Length: 495
Image (tube, rainbow, N blue to C red; front, side):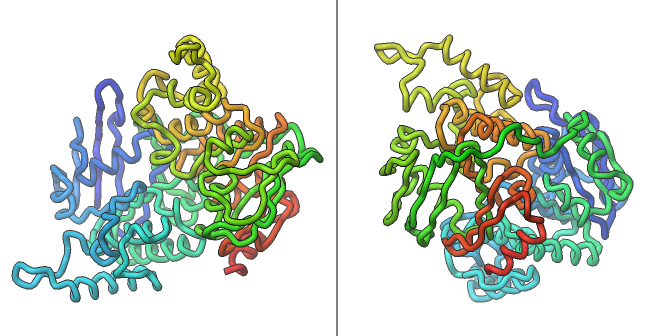
């Protein structure tokens, strides 16, 4: 049995955890939920030996243990699958899976035996067709996530921590992972599972602990708490509408048209986006959704086809062309593509205007700080961003970072917004705030293209949904007339 007792942790002036206690038993899946910044990851990193606690103790099998570092935690059987991948991109799949646990003959790594051991781990995981000798950088994000999971299980841990493991997985890959977790439960392992998808909690978990602002807001059997109450524990208030309703409806005017566009990963894709419309783009992960978003926003050029904005053909050679034409893009990965993490929230929010319209700058190239400050304050309020506008964005929680990534382009006042999985890996409350911002864009007559790997999001926010597979649009749905089962069936039948 695992007991975390009265765990506290402070980072400078920020209290990350305040006397948090948690119990988990062998053969149990214990879910840990809460908003970004609530302390979930910090608590798990203390268990995994990344951080020492300032106060409290960890008991395993009835005795107090000290996880002084990661190696010590591994000796006690703790394995963790991080949301942020910790792979070596230049090394092979086999090398990554067996990192630190290679088969050694004398003092030399037996590469053939290590490769076979990695294949066995992947086989137990149910993964087939993964190019085991290829460098990890050549894999898709979903395949890399599977390698991260296999790397953890190769150490044969007694306690397995999953931190948002399905964020980059397809529906089929998620089902495969769920089967693995159920097998770990049958093998009497302790599974600690962090997820923002509450339906996963109800499907997998036996018990759930809710953290809010570094303290335990609820802990008990999953069957004793319903969905609405669980969300209320997480955010400290009742959310009446998880998917807020829109005031307006799509208009007749066409803002954006793509006519048979081709590019690497795209095969003659056509679409239209009307004023006031939210067009959803779904399908299995890696089916061309990101390629489409990048072509529409100048990140990558189309090799064939035509893109028209308000009836006028536009040539999008780069992002600057797209912005000048009135198209804004929120990329999928906020940390590497969406934000300048070392710069302040204020600067991040102002950058699109500073760079592309030279607003808020005087005639000799200096920024007008008062206008920049006012612009940041307005967007901070509109997206309900928490944090000091003068602190680096890197110090914000994941949910607040994502709201900054969305808000900086909302402030540009573009005609069309292309949003690539804008709520992936963030908490319930932050999702609602971003949903409200998306609805406000549509109600203001903007066109929104919403790429999402989460079908309930597509069905509840969008007017129309295009399903992609292998770079093509294979189905189109009117969201109001479609069920999640129909959308899942369309996605599965396309594969």
